[in-house]
Image 1 (cartoon, one colour):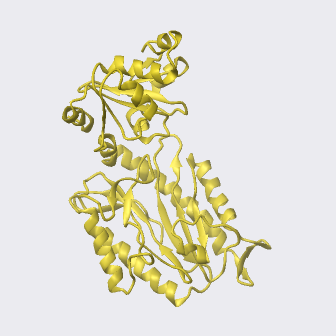
Image 2 (cartoon, rainbow, N blue to C red):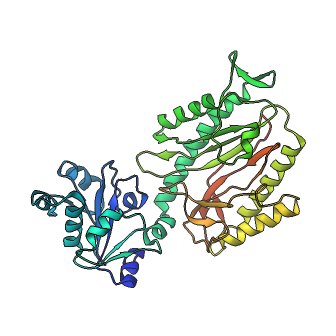
Length: 376
């Protein structure tokens, strides 16, 4: 019995229903169909799930999706529209017919659709996140897809770092070809490589100097010599939908003693955490061990210092289950997670290093092979 069938049994539901485009990771996972327009997915216990699509998408969906494919016309939607039912009502009517009883829905199910559906059958909320739980345990095929995206990501990072490595300092500002080298130029260089290899970079971080003390500052403007530069890149492969995720911190020139010490502490914390990753290890325990490690090195974990979780799952979303934070549960073989400790101090700067890999029965199968090199 798969996770979805078990959730239906425990909820006493006749069917599970999801609604959304492939931007919704659950819909993409269940349908394996890429679309910008929303589709309906309905699954009953022990049966192959069904995807309801517009007529124009029928043939493509049959080719791409492992689900049974029906058109909206065949599912009755157009008849309800012709009868004067508004869109949400007609969609709910169609789902009710397909479900034939109480419907289990995910947390992000549209409220308007749920309200209409309730007039036909009870609507039950999947608070445990059955599909998210299924997504968290990757198949060998998914693991190899993510591993291959990581290779592309590392090559893109290499392109960006090559620009920084070849830059020269003029008045404390990095220059290349006679012009200031900017965060935007480095980001564009990396994104161009990603696009050429079927990936899309979004919100890539290239922060420098004071901005590095803010973990998710995107960074902008000229890059500085002798200051930390944090590059966090997490592209999505456009065809498969899977992500990779990695971070490196570098300095072009001479880092301050404080940044050197922070870098060494972060590097050692990452190695310590990775050594504890295996099936059965508890995410919260790994996080707390990292907090204690930093505390022993003299770095607090509050409003400054180590201010975020140790890591997270990666897949069709760049942040998904499982968590390696204060509420993290036991890891299982097949999870793909990041290990990304960091330290952040206003006035000094920030350092973060991030690797990604798969949890196995015995250890951490690290996908990230890119060198750790503070000084360029």
